Length: 300
Image (cartoon, rainbow, N blue to C red):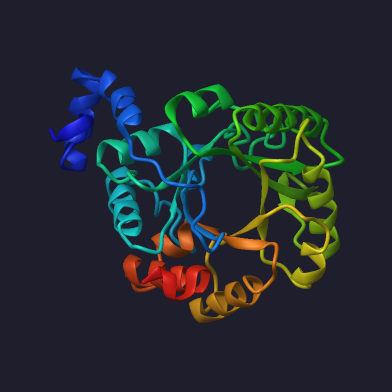
């Protein structure tokens, strides 16, 4: 055991949870915080909230993220790179990273709604099952993220919209970032499909931007799509681009990110699987490329 309740290895985490669970709250209280953004106004976050929605696959590997010890090792490697600003995760993952000492001087964004399990009949009714705005503020996290899928054929959409609006309002009251990730979605048989054409993304942007009683602390999390300059002209809200499930040549992915980051409203990336499970397995190298795109020379 090290200072402020931290542990030296992943293998020690369970023992802390059994014997001294109060160490987690103490470690959050002792965490060194930093401003949300650097002087360049840009941000690179590693996403680690997929598993809580039952999403474990990366490319053809359906259970790539099933091992928590392996995922934590990859996350710690990523967070140690100087160009990484922080992490987006659910309470179980962030508490583990906190105990491992990986969150000092890093941005920590809590994932709030994970109830819309992938493939479920209730997927659009994306209940808020993880962090609340009050808990995010109490623990000293830096913001909260909400997935907000809009499906006109599914009545569960309205409950998700209402809950997302409430979370945006509550986070703004605490002066904390509200990261809204909207998708215009349709059902194709039993599958929920996110429409990634520019017009659908523009429509989702307008709905997301209007959620809550204040937009002062609202950021968007959007996919990289065609005609992104037109998509970004739909809002003045700062936007982080998501990486998604990596497919194809990584160099093509990096090139698309680099082009997108030239747009004024695009302020960085939130990437999970593409950085944590890159082809060849070199997490540090993949993270450094992304950090160079986001921060340029400041990432070194």
